[in-house]
Amino acid sequence: MLIKHNSVWMIDIEAIGNHEKYTVDFHPVEKRISLKRNSSEWIFVVGFSYYLFNGKAESLSTPIHLENGKVYVPAKETIESFGREFQKKLTLDTTNNTIAFSDLPNQKPTTIPSIQFNKKETAGTREVHTIVIDPGHGGKDPGALGKKSQEKDIVLSVAKLLKKKLTKEGFNVKLTREKDVFIELSERANLANKWDGDLFISLHCNAVDGIERQKRTEGYHFYVLRAPESEEDKAIARRENKVASLYGDKGAKEELSPLEWFKLEARLEKYKQNSYMYTEELLNSFNNNGKIKQLGTGVGGAGFMVLVGALMPAVLVELGFITHPKDEAYMNSAKGQEDLASRITNSVIEYKKAVNDYRKTLQH
Ligand SMILES: [Zn+2]
Image 1 (spheres, rainbow, N blue to C red):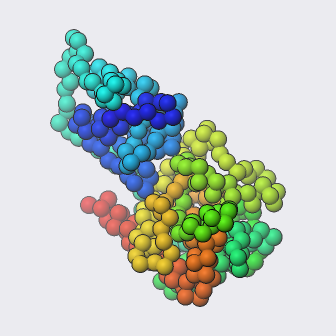
Image 2: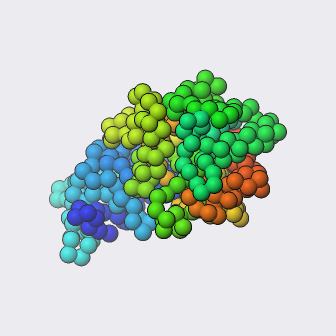
């Protein structure tokens, strides 16, 4: 139940919740765990130095940590608030790596109301109609480089195919660029907002340095806008954001501070559920016997500047690694581009269905 991570004692939050008979829900895409009972709710998100208790943020000295599928929070800082809420005294037993629960003296017995408080996360239910496709980079910014190709050309080709396919399915499709031109990151989001999009998909190709890493690193990966969980995710965001600083996009930066994250989280809250819903459809579609493998869990979070300004559900798609020979060849082939565009098209169709189904459940 207790582990020591970077010399900080951390508690397995799921074990605590189960012990106290809370309803524990783990959402793998968001990497978020919630503990609910009666009118109390805790929310912990991996990578964040904050947690929410009944909607109120409490700060933590160490970010929430995911290890072997379990979510750990700093023990010392949270144990008191758990104790208050459970009306028990919690003591860390660091010899046996467990937590002792003992009753507080002279404590009134806990009364448990019979009505379950159910605060449902609400996703947007607007009909999914306008899809904004953002082929990354362009013009003087080639993006990542492969042996034979440039990121900017691959993503433009896939975007054009995607436009054709989605239009055929009845969607209103807009491209942030139709040809090889340079567009600033902030302008891409501005365009999407101007078009009043229902979904923003930014297309990219991933890359790594070093011959050995290039040989073994392959696969697609999707990114939603949330605090990064790993150094790799941070590095990928820095690389994609570099365009901004390299080419003089004023006000853009390579990384967000924790405070900026916190403010941004609040602003993007209303689009988050839908971004996650869509990302799940993307995963389903790409997992289905694709030529390009899934990298890791397939989903990460990071501060991609191109997503920051878009006031709509948004996802950044790294189609594959341009630095990996197999991925590069596939992403450049007509068959590969056709396949990638079809998979994204299917994910949009399924997402539209999911939003419609969700709306129906609300009407009942
Ligand atoms: Zn890119």
